[in-house]
Every structure is written in C-alpha cells, then in structure tokens.
Length: 467
Image 1 (cartoon, one colour):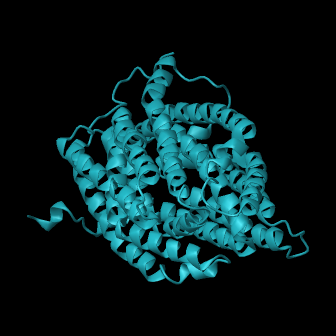
Image 2 (image 1 turned 90 degrees about the vertical axis):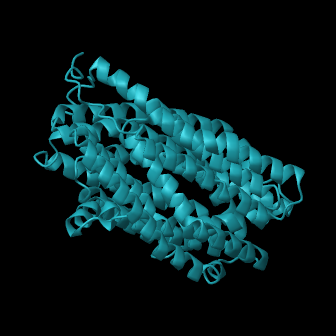
Image 3 (image 1 turned 45 degrees about the horizontal axis):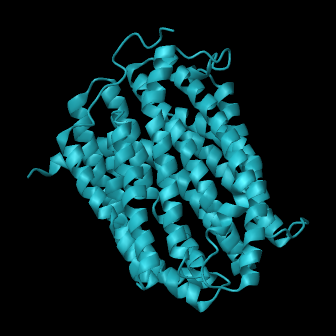
C-alpha cells in the first residue's frame, strides 16, 4: 500500500489549506465568539440559557435550509468557475438570492405564528414550572428579535458562498471576523449593561447578533461590488433577475434535494434533542453546553468538508476526473487526521468547561458526559461529513438527501423516540446509542465513494445559457 495514495505533497496541502484554512479561521472565530456569547448568557442563569438554546435550535433549522439553498446553486457555481464560465457563476448567484429571500419570508412567518408552540416541545421534562415558563418567555422574545437579522444573514451567505466557489475565501473570512468582533463587544455591553449600555440579558444577545449580521453583509457585499475585477460574476448581477430556464430548472432539480436535506437533517437533530429533553429539564442545558464546545472543536473537519466540495467540484467541472478522485481520497484522510488534535482538545476540556456556567452540578455532570461522547465520535462524524461533500461535489443531491436527512429522520430520530419514551435507559447511555448510529452512515458513505457514483461533470453541456 503506497503512502502517496493517501497523502499528498507539500503543494497539495498548501492548495487544500488555501481553501480550507480561511473557512476554518472564520468558523473558528465565529464559533469561539458564539461560545463566549453562550457563556455570557449562561452566566445570567439556567432559565435564560435554556430559552435561548431552544430558540437557537429552531433557528438552526432555518440556517441549514439557507445553507442548502446556497449549496444547491453552489455546486453549479464551483463547476462553472472550474470551466471558466463567469456568466454561469452570475446566474447561480442570482438564483441563490431569489430562493433565499423566499425562504426568509417563509421562515419568519412560521416562527411568528408557531414559535411558542415549537418552544414548548422542549419544555416537557421534569422541572420547576416557574423555570419552564421563564425559559419559554425568554426564548420567544429572543426568537422574535433574531428574525430582524434574517435578511442580512441570507444575503451575506449568498455573497460568501459564491466568493468561496470562485476561489476568494479571504474576504468572507475577513467579513466574518469583523462581524464576530462586533457581536462579542455588543454582547458584553448589552447582556451585562456595560460601556454605558442598558442591561438586557438574553435580549441583548439577540440584538448583538442582529447588528453583527448587518456588519458582515455590508463588508462582504460592499467590497465585492467595489472590486468587480476580482469577482467578475458581480458585474451586472442585479441588472436583471434573468436566469436561463434550462439552468434554473437544473439548479432547482439538483438544489431542491439539498434544501430538503439540510432542513430535514436539522429537523432530525431538533427532534433528537426533543427526545433527550423528555428525560428532564436539565438535559437541554447540558446538551447546550456540550454543543457549544463541540461547535468550536468541529471547525476543522467541517471546513475540510467545504474544501472537498469546492476543490473536487472545480476539478470535476474542468473534466479532471482522475485528479478529482485522487484529491478527494487525500482530503478525506487529511480531515480524519485533524480530528485527533481537536478530539483531544475536547477530552481535555470535558471536565473544566461546564464549570464556567452558572448552573447546577447535575447539569455540569451531564454536560461532561456528553462532551466525552462527542469527542470520541468526532472521527466518525468527520468521515460522514466528508462523504456527504464528496457526493455533493458531483451533483448527486438526491443521493445525499437519502444519505443525510432520510437517515436522520427515519432511522436516528425514531430510535431516539422509542428509547426515550418506552425504556428507562439512562440519558447518557441513550445519548451514546443515538450518536453512535452515525457509524452506519460511514459504512454507506464508504461504499458510495468507492463505487464512484459521485463522479459527474454537470456543466459540460454548452446550452445552459439558452433561455
């Protein structure tokens, strides 16, 4: 077995890190500041932390729907860029903007109408009724404030996604860094009433996030339009909303499974948390602490997944099939290796991190157990994530739909439902059983990648620009 089959040379890793590192840095800073924000809310109290955590679980579903919409057109965008077709990239950008604005209107309507009912689903475990009602009130108020930032969030994602697909990863990173700095400062000021600002608690956390999202949009969109020579796709992007009918149909055909996939996968995760919450009110708070640390430590393999989608997609669009296969294999190995470092960090922090929060000892103990389980399963999650982006790079979006969201909703969630309601299994063992089911996805992902079903150039036809 030759090592060069699985490991690249210095040039290879430089190329991979050129794409992955800015994404990793941006996500790392974003998640690190998000962790600090979460700690700040957690210092206010368990009631506020639980309400905000549940609201963010619901917002997470919307965020992933947007991610799916951007990614659907992004598959074509990356391959058009690899082909050298700037008109194609521009059409993909327009498609992103239109579909994301429609989803924003739909998401706001659902949250305003059904927000309290959705929040109550997570407040059915054993606990003090006053605390439960307080979490509901804090959560819905936080949710309504966060809706004000949705338009900025979706437009910033449209710009950032297209820039990354065309090789410009530094600008989105810079905009993201600026946004999280603003978010952190505003959080400190508004949550605790510092720097002459009023003390707003969890409401202040929402306002700070909204402000930061508009800062990010102004930077990423403003600099893109100021330097069109660096991003030719932006020239005339808003001159009309025209998208060739054939291309729009193909993007919708490939993209709809991705939108459904991301939405249903997030819904599956939300259902999973709801099943955990049945055990006790404390479980939501403990899971929130674990997820907060996990979000910071997962940045490496998540960024590598994005890099796989971009780099392999560009190679497929350029018709370099054998190079795409070789690159994909080496990037997956690289992604797995990063987990050794970040998984170790999670394990080292498992006992100390929950102590930062102003909560009960029971919540801290549960959080430590959840963190240790998540750290041990990080390589498993890394491989399934890499397999997902590999399949997606070739436009196999229906396959990824089955691989990702159908598995989450029709396998993991039902198992969690049965175990949480019809057994007396302790919550830690229940959590381990449900999270370990990701192993099945790894097996399926390995077989799909090995079969080569994902290898496809979806922009080789020349008639996509016809109306």
